[in-house]
View 1 (cartoon, chains in turn yellow, brown):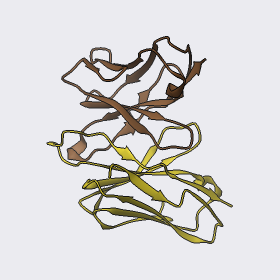
View 2 (view 1 turned 120 degrees about the vertical axis):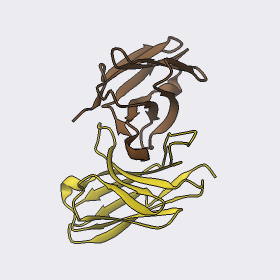
View 3 (view 1 turned 90 degrees about the vertical axis):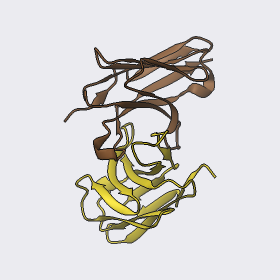
Length: 116
Length: 114
């Protein structure tokens, strides 16, 4: 299995809703990431998990809450979002460590989120 | 902050011709660079990478060139095909503490003309 699977593919939510995005990989990668991508823009890093622990939070608003229940799963809990949070949310995973042979990410196809 | 940028936002190429996508970076601490391809409705896909101790690396139909003196990165695609149409991002990793904090450039849209 060489994929990162994200669900759902599309999500429409109201500003008072609570929803979660899910990400799963079975490649044995121990680093997982959330990126946000607005239309015609590059992906922007939100969070990095390394060995199931949050290692980087790029000053993301608290209405986004990440969770890493185990080495294969990564969630992003959403609450009280704003319309400007509408974007493509990408999950990625990678081998971690300076001795790793391949530093490239494997990305999922993303969740297209629309906040109304 | 320091960033990775691209000279050309859109590149149109005739099918069969070679494509060259350029990227300028400004973080001299970066030691690892990656090119990603993103097709519409999909996540970025790894194409090729290069470490700072190299100046050229070849893959299947793709070549990445790194010029550390002028902080310039390029992706060459040989015999461009319609399936190559996508947005291409260069990305850098400053190897910050071992965490792979990859930063993406602004992207170049490659349009292949049949």
